[in-house]
Image (cartoon, rainbow, N blue to C red):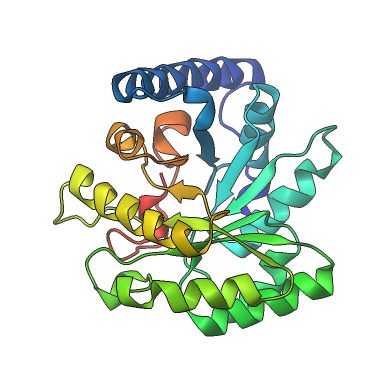
Amino acid sequence: MTTADRPTAIPAALRRAELEAALRAVTARIEAAAAESGRDPRDITLVAVTKTRPASDARLLCGLGVGHLGENHDREAAAKAADLADLAVPPQWHFVGTLQRNKAASVARYADFVHSVDRPTLVTALSRGAVNARRTVSCLLQVSLDADPRRGGVPAEGLAALADAVADAPGLRLAGVMAVAPLAVPAPQAFARLASLATRLRADHPRATVISAGMSGDLEAAVAAGATHLRVGSALLGARPYPATPRTPGTPQDGAA
């Protein structure tokens, strides 16, 4: 039984009301942060991270107007993408977790965005998968903001070469950058660093305009720094219903909520 098959513990109507209230609260936070920063909230995309939640929650969010859903694990994501394929307007799927090379072909079959591209071997595997699936996958380069190899991400000095590799790869589109704020670095400082790197990237790749940053606890700082995509899980869906597999703190699996 996959997480996509797990039933919700409350009636659908009540769960819909809960999600609607949470979505309204998150939207209000985004709008307030945008106003504080002089930004148009319509330029900010909310990616609802539905990891460990049933497909019924994802379906309800789509019914409430959420058009972008994020997942961390291939098996769970593939099941939910198949479950929601019958929607008149299916959501765009964002793979936001650490991606193993041997899962790249599977992810390329359903993901519209992959937020965790951080090495050339993954670029090659994703490109092959996208070509075989006859799809174009938008790639975000995961940037390491603290040079900790345990948490994934390309170091700043390797960003340009990795960007060129994605831009030249068949089936892939270089969309921008992603990062998780390190635990030891204040979120405003971390996201300002990411924004600076994004500006440098756009000098060579003008269409790489996406900045994926910010989660439930630090989305305001991300908006202030220019984030275009916010990965929000717990503020929308509540605490996880059961313990997830332990992860290193700060990795996309833990941080994409």
